[in-house]
Length: 504
Image (cartoon, rainbow, N blue to C red):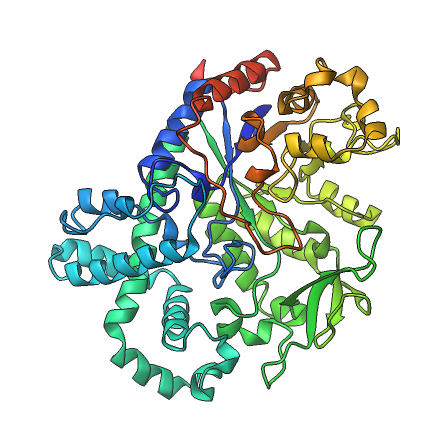
């Protein structure tokens, strides 16, 4: 199913209101989808749904296949008979008045739910228990994920290479003995993922019924300290002593003299080829069970990737290595019956070879309006230079300032370049940029929810290169303008023939 001309909103589930701690796969997501549908908005885009790292980032996850257990909805578990209805509700602990996700409280909630689900499991009907067992048997990743997460707990969140050697190197006999001694603990992790899967399937069914496309996100690399690397070391650039041989990043450029060092191990592509890219294909297949379209982060690494010696502290001494992306994408296309439901994150310095790979695979690329107005008439992000429809246009992404923050940070010379494009230059709002994006030829236009509310950078979701105050912003129902903003956005979408056709 190909996406027609449409409009969307970028809002991660953690940012949804109407729940304690953070947004969930329960009523907060249902209310949100119905609000989008009533406003005629056809696409909900979000970040990876995976568990986060300790800083709240879903781009450095301990698992490429699992859901973030923060999203599990407690009220739905009680309603469906999986928890006692006298279980303490966390809403009294956090009224979200500061509009921020408390990561520590979120993890505390998960631990509480995990123990309670196990305690209540014996009371479940045999058919439910059998359904759970069948589901578990079909998740090839689940066993490794649950063992990894429990060992992380038992060893005080140490990275796997600092665990006792018998577990770090996955001694088969030792792990089997450990599993026998930790059956209840592993049951808890498995139950979390089963319930998350059930709840998300319900959300996806609702979105489909409302005519709303779900637009997900897949990081390119995975964290070294993850179940993926721990259980598949041969697929990654990891030495026998667990050190990283080659790590990921991008080369020095105009913005950084030393480049960006991300630290993830790069892929050992020869091993992936030998298995016909089985791990990658299962990973993409898992994502596409959850969403209609998938943004593939750092797409350029499917053509060639920057590889940095494992012990280096900057990305300066890296080098380019070829990537078998064309072969991989061809196999994924076959898996998807001839259509690739992927969007290429092709931002930054992109070569003609990367563009050719994107175009040969008929993938939409990305255009960011905040990058457009530098005085260069050839700037590819300028609205008039977006000359065909195979693009997704954004005001900004989760890594950018809000559009109001962007305007406030901009120098006067650059602002002047927008004077003729802006209706009310003296009283700039994010809606100026939203209108410009809506009017482009691009197939899809997406704005972060912060821009619909004209919020400043105090509501920014992430600032790359920093670790404070990221990934924690939440939408507040105290802002009475939410539905008004959604309706205004929907009206603008309709005027530009970008709307959820099922709503009109």
